[in-house]
Image (cartoon, rainbow, N blue to C red; front, side, top):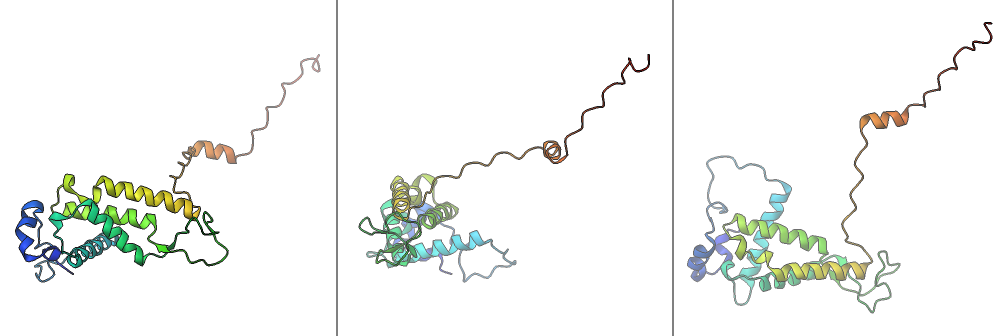
Length: 201
């Protein structure tokens, strides 16, 4: 696993450490822990992979970028870069299948990263940035430009794919156990009429 020390070039080490105070020892693969490492959850493993992928992207950037100099604009570049690996068909307005959730035939429209995947990715990277010493107010993954971009991707993909991303309505609260049992039981028959007093006379 790549260490965070490789996020920037050696000349950027001092500025990175002073602005973000990254704890390199906690993520270095070369150090041998004296205790067994706990098994990470699927979310934590994915967050670590995403963090390393973003670090690789910064190192390959021309010119290379340090994490301390990363802004919301660089995050947007990263998201657009990921589109080339997308698997979600997003129809253009000229496509006859625009707005159809289940097109009947293939088309040459481009593949993109799905909005849900990008939204989850940004959430993980935003958390990882702060876990590695970044200040919340300086978090590039929480920049307003990133939020606006995700909203734009959501709306455009919803129209192109004919899929609604609206929040699901809340389910009605479950009935109490007494009410549900009463609904299953047959109705109680009415009581018999009182004996007639005229018959005894």
